[in-house]
Image 1 (tube, rainbow, N blue to C red):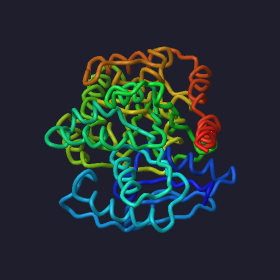
Image 2 (image 1 turned 30 degrees about the vertical axis):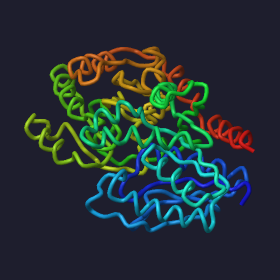
Image 3 (image 1 turned 180 degrees about the vertical axis):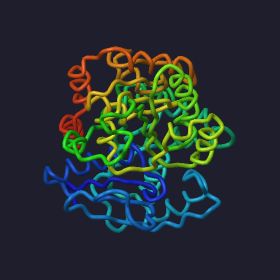
Length: 379
């Protein structure tokens, strides 16, 4: 088990997003380098929303997840901590790569509880200050303390963007040099998957341009602002809006679509396994988030040559777009500014090859090589 690497997820059948996708891409790349890989989940219920890397071991800890613990910080963490401690005592991999603080502190304390010889590498995926500020209540008070009490025990701290690294250094009172930055990767086969057939009438050659967004239907993604922006855009352009993703705000968003009279012009298609074939055929990609860590979908859109408009939120979009060089940045929550940016992208010309080159800078080969070097440096 000396060279084995584990990758941890909380409950992928209940919560599966960009962080989990990034983890699985790196796991698959390392597996192709001959490194034994274990995918560890606190609990999985039913079919997994992903394909396991070839040859990887899968461990379902089957930790109880009570209904009164909707957020993994509270209700389910005691059970997850106990399950992880038992796993670490029995058969811990040499190293565990753990995305996000809600998973990180539990893994760190489970290791400490049993004295397991496993190295814990935190791959932080959120701008924690922004995330905690938006959570409110006791969550926003206790969560920073858990991070501050736990993260000093990590064998390595990795951030998914420079902005996340700066925020984490400030939160922990550490020099930024103590935190490595490894971006989330695009998939190696993104172009092949983008060329797969798309059987949707809105993407036929004779149809109006499609504005596309991809993300979990949750408050931090701020799709209401996108809907308001689209309402403005359609007054001057014949366009349609497609949102890919699923989440708790579906009912709210569907209600907005009806009240705004946008039926037939907006489609919430839910989770799709291959968003790239939509990106390849849409006209403009929009990211409307209130906060991010590193919006992987933005990089994927660039890698497929899409025109992009994104909120200038913490953290990631400004880094990815080079301060506006490769796309338009707008203020968070500014529907009219977003509409203006979308209009400019619909009407203007872009250097598609330059956009593709920028997106490909976040290749899986480059990111995987950085992780391999970090693992070797840890000994």
